[in-house]
Length: 114
Ligand SMILES: [Zn+2]
Image: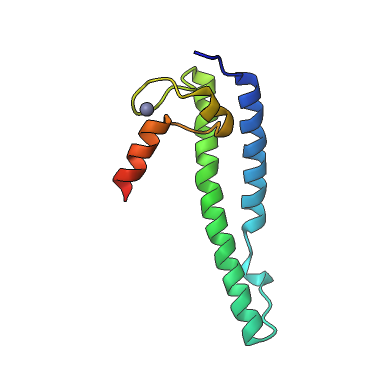
């Protein structure tokens, strides 16, 4: 098996974590900051706020994956599929360092969810 560059993975995960934390912070709009000039402006502002909330939800979920991957790096289980316990392909980890499952298990689980 090809070895994975864990130091590079850790750097990528740490960078991603900082980026996500920043996005989550920015997406929070305090209600007091909402200023409605017109109905149209109000509608677009509500739309933007909903979009921001959806973005924040996705970012929060992603942040959890990144945090979990960093925890696995620390406890030495990084790169092992959580479902079948086989090694995750290094190419997959390079593309998606927070991947918790091998491609086969991820595909199988995505199919089950539908
Ligand atoms: Zn697997």
